[in-house]
Amino acid sequence: MNSLSANSTGNCSGGITGIRPSSASDDQVGGGAAGGDADANSRRQATRVFKKSSSNGKITVYLGKRDFVDHSTHVDPIDGVVFIDPEYVKDRKVFGQVLAAFRYGREDLDVLGLTFRKDLYLANEQIYPPTQSERPLTRLQERLIKKLGPNAYPFYFEVPPYCPASVSLQPAPGDTGKSCGVDYELKAFVGKYLNSDARNPHPIHPPIIRLWFVFN
Image (cartoon, rainbow, N blue to C red):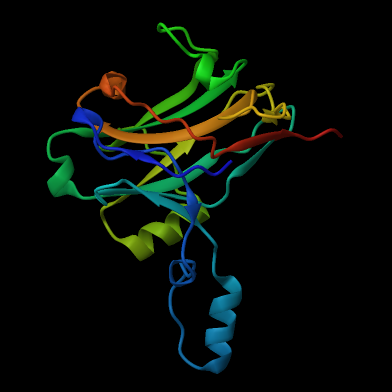
């Protein structure tokens, strides 16, 4: 489920399409503390984050979790930060998208431009440069920005309620490739326009976000 890949083609070089847990040294996103008791307390308060960098290392996405719950009245928001290299981005922009995809056929049957996959963009946002309508930072974003510095920019996505839950159908013996079902993806990429990523001839869409229902 956690395929880790990144694109680096054209305007969307540095596209990020996978998230993995950070190393132990990166898990400590809180400030340091002196003394044995303070160190132990700091470790207890440390926040685990998931991160993924582009193949060229110029952009990195940080998330606090990969599981998000549909509570019927609302869905857990998707919040995190993107750390960028401004010398690489220059006059371009950094965009983020949340994508739901429904695959109803095997990948090896995708021929002649026909694919057994239906994509639906649920949300998109310009992350850098920041827009005028800035919302208050979440606790996770505050801690990450404090640790990473001024080149870390927050993002915040709200997924509509009643979206389909993440589902993966059991493949038949001998089937290869991704399983049929519904998966979710968070993508960040660099470009002058929101549709810059469409120019990538080799898009990669690993499922990294799981959406679950809660029945009260």
